[in-house]
Image 1 (cartoon, helix red, strand yellow):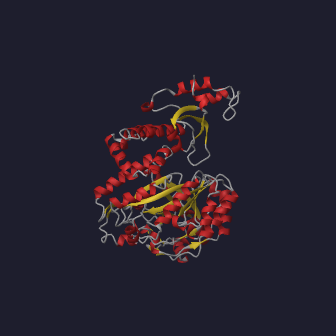
Image 2 (image 1 turned 135 degrees about the horizontal axis):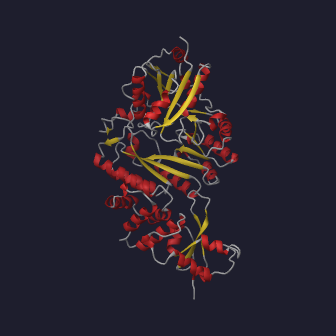
Image 3 (image 1 turned 180 degrees about the horizontal axis):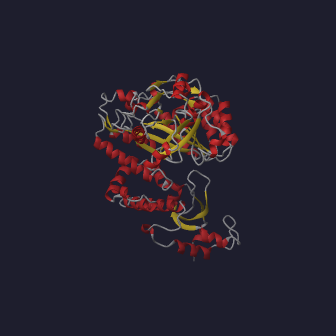
Length: 562
């Protein structure tokens, strides 16, 4: 029988902007072993219309279909291969990826490949060419992982998509909830090779390159050398790294202070600050050093920080989870994610589920439902708490408010728990989460406090910093137009710090003016004199991570009208 002429490699991503790194590795491996084959990459998403996806996968009668399976696409993939097996009996389908072995019952046409494509025995390709595949191929570790992309990929498959890049493979940790726990092997490309490959990637000027290394900074000297090279190369591309916060060195931190704002973004897995929990899941971390590092990185104001907590870990109860949240909030990262634990098959934690009385969903993504220390009601409440934090905190809307809570040492868990109660009463989660609605709810939430007026000022300040040219109804008093009219009469024809005589009309047309107390402005990061000051919210935005409006304080002689 003649060998297959057409292989269709199918990705089922979460959204259009995502890409699937595995497809490019598989394509290159197929071309090396079966050079005469025609290979097509087909990126789809799990949110595409199902029937249209099915038709696109089968269009043109490909000889072999190859899929990459993950927990986020497993349900759709299982449905697809089942339907393909029924409507096209005998259609060879190969499934690889971390979730390949846990899809449940599959058609006889499916072949599972476990492990890295670089480690596949050549016999697999001979069987593939003859379409005489075994049900299962177990793969050894690959010796290396060569650069997966070629120039034309960036104008076809990767156009307008995130670019994933792997500079190391494996993880130095053995967290029991992670698939990496089964393998302690870590392979690193040397810094010079990484620099060369990144230059090739940057020729296409992508907006974002996401390093998929499980712990990018596990070798501090190597990580620093790569960061230094990226700063040297320059450009507008942003770089995303997963980092361990307790593995930073002083040399790294000193360098990171010099990095241009927005160039790097760090994803930091704290997961829990509870010592019992960290021991139970075999996660080695110096919690105090980790939190201190996050605070130091946050103070630099140039690197976006995304910190993860996991809800439903062994030995974690409501009190310890609340403490983890409170301690992470005190670092004021830009984003706090609180995801449910996923009890993945073949992980050590899955084998310990009975020990910790873990109940989890039977189907992907296997979310936890209850544990020995958190019943389902508690988990459900904390999940909704996380959703409340996601809506109100993980944006640029209220930075001064959060800074105030930190400065006063207020218990942030209690603050958000009480806010959640109000959100449920007002059916917030059934409504569009606009900034105006969130301001209204926060104003109502703080209305009975002794510091209510100060908090309302901070809400107004943050609202205007976001570029709004009107005030929400709850803050209506003297109109913004009246403030502008008063100042237009009081200020001179030319005021060099802000405008020239020629620019005066444009300045007053585009600028918003509002008076604030000195205390509110100190919290917001300004340094006024006197009891109150007038703030100009200028047309231009800051070149920082939030992109908020630039501000200027007016001298008192201009803000008081006889």
